[in-house]
Length: 138
Image (cartoon, rainbow, N blue to C red; front, top):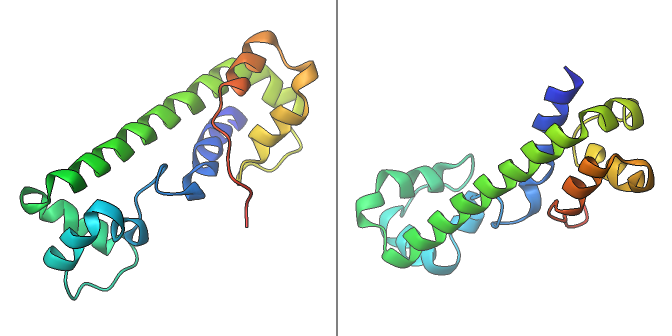
């Protein structure tokens, strides 16, 4: 059970890191999607994914540049999920023994694994070394 929680929270610990990880209303309104949002989603109050949903609903009218940006972010999320899956699969024992007293969430499990790098199993050490770095939490 702790492994499943670790998987969930390892995955979630990378979410609030920037548009590279997840698309939010705020980030959807920037860069190549800005003009699309102004044109297609005018009057929609940002927040709770309303802008992102508007872009999804108007996908046929979204510019190629915005579509490319959104696709790249989907690929990054998929890659991140695969990295998390690899860490959990490789670190089951290490998480249960070294991080059993750590509350999952906000990257605490991955931080625990990194703090205990010297004692990690070889497979876990390799998986943690390949993990994307998170920016400092605010």
